[in-house]
Image 1 (cartoon, one colour):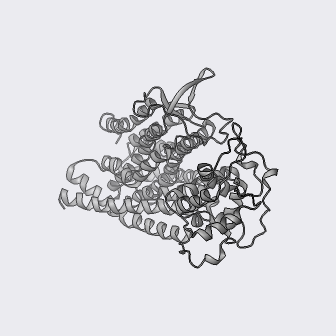
Image 2: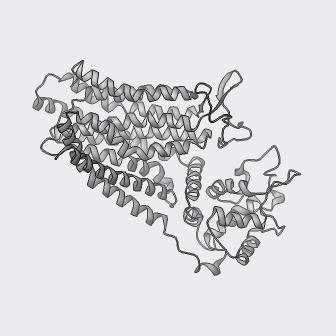
Image 3: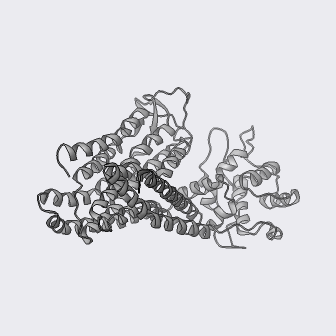
Length: 525
């Protein structure tokens, strides 16, 4: 095959793999709208995100020239790890940048105060988005949660150290002896990968229990609604029981705190008898359309505002007479106003099917999130598994024709195929400009590196141990661990400027050049 034929095949395979990765991403989001979200979110989703890279590594270890093709697998592993810790990092800081101001003698982000925004969901301020200064704008994060992710990332680098001990110790052996000598170390490294992999998933499951889990579930549900997924599909699995359940009776507004009173809003968790996930999901919608009395009374929705919420935000269009009946059902105290308490209870009843029963047959039946998720994940995973091997062959052939190492081709190309959608998603998520959103976004980048250190590296070491191959990637290992050590140091930094983000971005070309110098100049190959 000629270069142009290979480029065409590579483009086709790349397009199919990107489509498969997007399907995995879409299916992962849909899983968050199922009753298994508390289990799936912290365990299954990180695994699915690492499937494309692991597939490329796996298929690079087979065939007559497996040892040579393994360079492609290492390029995918190194490129994915370094890229995810550099390019999305600066995109997160640029997208989430707010003004940095002096508070109590130290620099901090211009976010709402902790008293007015205890949950950290308030949008930060950026006074001049077009002319901001990279040294006076940036982000502020919750260092406690970021440090936990940083420590996990650092500890999961241990398998690199284990296999590198063998690589340095037996470097002067011939190929066959080199592979045999490294095999026990590869098995030990693989065991470490498995232990860290399981431990990290268990840890994720533990920290996402309780209110933390509800916050993340609500955030994901709100995001799906913004993408046009009907509320009936997003939240129906988060209500207790089915039709006619014995839910707790709503509390009269006179018994509630004066939520919405000027200058001193009470936390939403003070409300009684409401589903926490539903409350945290629809509260932003309530706040967006509600009426705020001038006398500082409780916020409420009137009939017109409820109609707008149903049609514009929930994507549920009803006739005027139907909406009138729904309003009457929501307004339990009959005062012509729907409080946040009544709104949450009413939405939960609507999701259970206890409201508007006569019109169920008229509503278009929506596909169950679980069914849609299984379809998307199955199709995406199948596409990734089927076309990862051909892409590895194309990169190998392209390297032979051009004289460029398979490692460098895979380092530059593979991450854009397998992780390209994460670049865009990170930037969009960071644009919310809240302290919580930027903290969660950076945690996800650390999490992606952890999955590469455990799942993807584990596949690599399994190939070394079982296929008679050898590990000769000292330069690449040094580059991977170097970037993670630098990013570990940053996890202790509470405030990061945009300038520091561009400094992190420079680690990407530094690693590429560093590998070349170590291999060509110092003979680490």
